[in-house]
Each structure stands twice: as structure tokens, then as C-alpha cells.
Amino acid sequence: MIRLFSVFVFFLTIQCSFAQINVYPSHWWIGMKSSSLQLMIHSNENLEQKVSLKQPGLVIKKIFQPENKHYLFVDLEILPTAKPGRFVFSFSDGKSFSYELKLRQKNPSTHQGVRSEDLIYLIMPDRFVNGDPTNDSFKDLRDTMSDRKNPFARHGGDLAGVESKLDYLKDAGVTSIWMTPVMENDMPIMNENVWKMSGYHGYWITSHYNVDKRLGGNEAYKKLVQTAHQKGLKVIQDAVYNHIGNHHHTVLDLPMKEWLNQWPVYTGPDHREEVFFDPYASSAEKNKMIGGWFVPHLPDLNLSNPYVAKYMIQQNIWSTEEFGIDGWRVDTYKYCDEQFLNDINAALIREFPQLTVFGESWTNSVAGAAYFTQNNLNVPFKHQIKGVTDFPLQAAIMDVLNQPFGWNQGIMKVYSTLAQDFLYKDPFTNCIFLDNHDMNRFFSMAGENLNKYKIGLGLLLTTRGIPQVYYGTEIAMKNFMDPNDAAVRLDFPGGWKLDNADKFSSNGRSPIEQEAFDFFKSIANFRKGSAALTKGKLVQFIPKNGVYVYFRISDKQKIMCVVNSSNKEEKINLSTFNEIISQNKILLDVLNRQTKNIDQNPIDIPPVSFQIFELK
Image 1 (cartoon, one colour):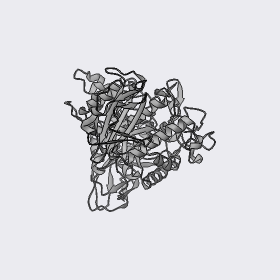
Image 2 (image 1 turned 180 degrees about the vertical axis):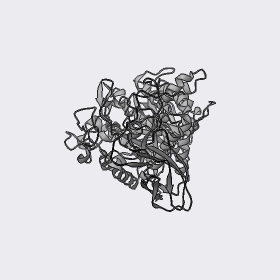
Image 3 (image 1 turned 180 degrees about the horizontal axis):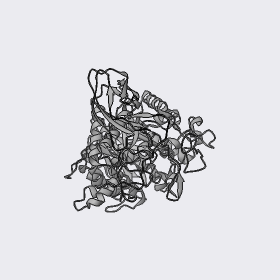
Image 4 (image 1 turned 90 degrees about the vertical axis):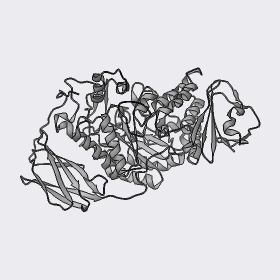
């Protein structure tokens, strides 16, 4: 791709009476699988290219200075003889800085990864619980607003608030939490469309080495992860490789012209992933997909630049080791340089073999989703990530709730979507979901119909994959993205001291909210102890008259799930499923603990219902 110097980016010369030197990564560890480390050294003054180091076990292999003399890139080799501690780099003009190598902490509860036996709970920390009102705003940040009455401003939720609700989440059946990005978003209020918005969501990153202090900072994040692990919960961090906020130091003081994808005028992507695997695709449109900027205030990183790639790879390794997280969800995955994606995934797995990484690939087809993960496709580029966020299955479940049964609509869409799983290397590693922070709320998409809610949630928690729910789904929080996504990111009621109702407690819930919560909790906790639902194979039968029957089977357990998507009672003949149930005599209804004798055939299936049976 030809990259031109952008009219949106400029060098910012900082006038200062003294040299301020920052180093990235901020520190490192001995004992890593890779012995190489590249330091980005940044100053507000020009840096001398000659750097010396007298430290046993450390060798400077290469020094590179880009056109902006405020930067140096120093490649180190960490020998097996290196010892932990602080040491000094010296410049030829007398300037110096210290750097620390630490000893890796071996903790068996860290970097566990998430698997199909997990249930992920997605939280936007600013909108969940305000555990520490003293960190709601800071005068030294560009955005000083904290106003719960403004849907586009920060509301004060934080990591201490998330920590305070870990027992609530565990009791509800959750095993893992994924939070929208926690790293610093020191951005001013920005214009998006006609609204003035803050970076409360976390996707406008301005520092990759500091957790936003409005969330509590680095120490609060470490404490949250440690407490979660002590309670048997895992933590997934949200990454953004594709872009950064325009007040990141590498934008305010650009290291080199090729640090960003440059265009003569603002150019955005067309958002069509087909350009990567379409045999007839235009190269120019593929270049726009990789290099186009989402919005003018989110500069697009040139991930094919080896210095950018190294910076991002090391940052993700640093965060994994520093905070002890268990996995990554990667935002805007399909917009990134493809070779970079394979390289960063390989580097992470080399250092943390059990770590989980899944990419957000908002695709229009099963083939499109499969393209961005390990697959069975004959395509020119092979992605190596193990799983993606499964948008095709999400769309199919929504069709169940909003379309009548037909040859290729309604419940048939779930059947036909899962039938295409042969395209994936392992579809059980996909993250499956009903909604998230960028979509209409699931309960609203289900028409605020509690029976449809149970169908959607039942499918999510019993089919293949790693299920993820959006905060508030368990109490049937609702809304459409009207006028924009702030409407689906409302505060969790009870997360602030002055809230009228506390919906973390049964005392504060309406009858519908309590019924939704009870249904969620019952299946989620049953799922925890079910080998069939978490690890078993999936066998599905062609839907008939709007009724879909499928089984999850392990060596020691068989589960039968039945969805009736029609508006009338239907009957199913159990002999249809003799290949699976022939050795069983009893159906135990998991939700109401009632039993049915398999010989009492056929069985009645209520209209618009989800049922789950354990075969005895």
C-alpha cells in the first residue's frame, strides 16, 4: 500500500527546560521464552544515537533512530545469565535512564485461558458499579466530566465496583469476566456524528502501560485480577490493535511517518471482510479495509511496520504478565494486518501456552467468520487464532425469535448455521453471544417476551462454543441503539449508592426481572457441573414444525434440548431419536426437576418454549 503523509497527523514539538525520558515497555522480566527485547525510548528533546550499557547478561544488539530524533529503538538480548534488578543506560551526551528487569511470578491460577466449560460476563466498567467515588474525575485529564445524567459522559463506574460484585457473578453461574478496555483513555470530549462523547467505553487508548486512573489505575486492576482468581473466576482483557486515540504520545509526537496508515484525505474502510477472501476482490478495497481510519480521531496503526508490530506485541505480553490475565478479546480484528495477527498470536501463546485469544470478526457469513480463525478453507492466507466472536450464530438465534419457521428461516437458521461448522478447525472455541455493547439489547430484540428470552438464553448456554452474556442480560435489561449505542450502555441499577432500586438483589427486581434471573442462574449453574454441556459433542436433528431437538453427549451424561419456536403446542415422538436415547428410560426436566418416562410417547412441547432434559 502507498502511504502518504496525512493531513491529520503532525509533529508536536514540546518546549521544555529539561529532558523527560520515557521507556516502553516500562519494565520487563527475565525467564521469558523469547530472549529479545526492543525498547522504545522517547524524550521531549533530541536523543543521542550512542547508548551504552554495562550490565552482565544484557547485550545491545542494534540501535535505530527514526526521522523524529525524539525517539530511539534499542534491541536487547537477555542472556540466560541475566539477573533481576535495576540498571542504567547512558547516552554519549551525559543523559541516562534506569530500567528494571523483574523475575517472572509463577502462579498456577494465572493465564488459564477460557474454554467451552466457561461462561463469560461482559462488563463496561464505567456503567457497572461505582466502587470508589473519589476517582470519578481528575482535573489533570483532558476530559474532566462525570455526569450520570449525560448518556455520553463518564458515569464513575470502576474496577473496585467490579471487584465488589464478584461473589454476585460467581453465584449467578459466571466463571469469567471480560471488560471493555481498561487502559488509559486521556482524550478530550470528541464529536461523533452529532454527539459530543467521552471515551467512557475504553476504546480510545492513549497509554498502553497505564490503566485509566478513573477506573482505579494499575494497582486496582492487579487487585481485581488477584481477587477474581482467588474466587475461581478468570479475567479476559480487551485489546485494540487496529487504532489508538489521537492523543496517544506516538500521534502527538510521531516517531516516523510510517507509524500510521496515511492518506492524503480522511479515508475510512468499507467494512466488508469479503475483500480478504473474494477471488475477484479489488486490491485497493483491501488496502482501505486494512489502512482506513474508523473515525478521524482514531489513527490507524501501520501494523506491517516492524517497529509498530514489535511495540504492540510486547505491550500485550507485558499486560498478560503484569496483570496475570487469562485471555484476550481483540477488537476490530478483521481490520488488522494479517501477518501481524498471526505473529502476535504466536508470540502470546509461546509465552503463555494456556492463554485464550479470540478476535472480534463481525462477518456476514459462516465462511467469513471461519476465514479469520483456524479453518478448513482453501484460501491464500491462513489465520492461526483458535476462535472468533461468532456473529453468524448470533444472527441465526435472533432469526429464531423474530421470524416464523420456514425452509431457511426461523429456527432452521440455527440448524443450517451449525451445519456449516465443518468450515472451522474447532467451532467449540468460538465465543458465542446474544448481544454486546455495540448491538441492541437481547431482551429488546426478543420483543420483551420472556418466553423468547428463555429460548435465546437456553440456546446460548447449551449449544457448542464459549458463551458470553452482556451485563444486565440476567435481569432482562433492555433498549435499542436509539439514538446511538449509549442507549444500550445504561448503568446497572443498584451500582450507585443513590439508585432507586438495587437489582443486584432480589428485593429490587420486578417479577419479570426475577424470573429472568432465576432462569439464567438455574441453567448457568447446572451448566457448570454438566460434562455434556461443557465438553460433550453436539448432535442436532432437522427442525420439524418449528421444533428443534439437539443433544449434548459426553461419556457419562446425555442432555436433550428442545426448542418450540411456534405459537402452538407441538408433540415430538421420542422414537425419532432412538439412536441416542435407546438405552435410557427417564427424562429429567432440569429446570423443574420433574421426570418423564420415555415410554410415555409422544411428549407435549409447550408453544414458544425451551426445555432441557437429562437422560437417565
